[in-house]
Image (cartoon, each protein chain N blue to C red):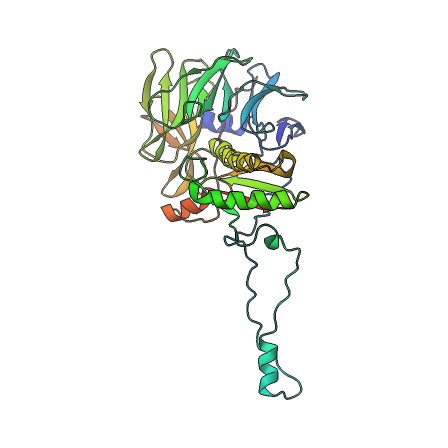
Length: 189
Length: 207
């Protein structure tokens, strides 16, 4: 009997399946989450070794030299100070009232920047079926796309895609971690 | 993307690469068609495609999630998962599309349908008190039996003789590949100790 099972399994008929590959987004490109929408603060530079012997004021002025961040950095695109991650309740694709302001800010930003494109990437927490979660993530992304559409953003500017439960933002299993994974991420191109 | 992979030659060909997700492919019993979930028109909907490729034909027209299609062994109907009633449940519709009737009624999260080759049983995964558990329904009587005491069961698939179900689950925190009899009394753990185990599918008897 056991042998039968193994030989049957060995002949698995394969309808090779790679989910969620229809998007131009590569699966290994996880967007940097930046909940405040602000430019990442540069770490202080290590103290430079001064040559020749400097004065104290020279050292201090070098120590606080700012780090240049490219103006085209993805994090810098989008309305300043507005979240690019919208969180959802379990099993839900409804945009909660506390995120309505953020959606409106993104809509305004896109209305001004008509050539900019936005990818809305839907995600779920890890509970439940892979396929159903892929569809649920799609529904979350679509909910954001439609909300933007109601505020005047054109379909051509926004693409809604889903990663289902495959790309958690937080690998923890407690409710706080799961809540961070039920999300739609807005990614400007 | 969805590929058809020829097991004997190792060759594969691309069947679907549309905008959005292309997922959950299922063969028709005669091997001529594939039904799959595409999100090319927004939401996740079911489409039929010729196994040789070509333009997909949309089978469902809902504002809801429709996914995880699987053919009945006679090829006349398709079982699938939909949240059209507000929560995911298993439905059945004609293979060419049309009116769907609900099949599962107990619980508010029933997914991943599989039909036994003899057409008598539906295996699926139900969320019960936060745990995901393999169930089998006798289609003639609608009697449901819970088969496992694990809590992360996935992707059931019947043996060709309709006597066993293979499924993926977790035991002691590790992925496991299991078989069970339809009464849940005899189980066997199949695969090795480590690795990511998912979505088993029992192959047909070779002819």
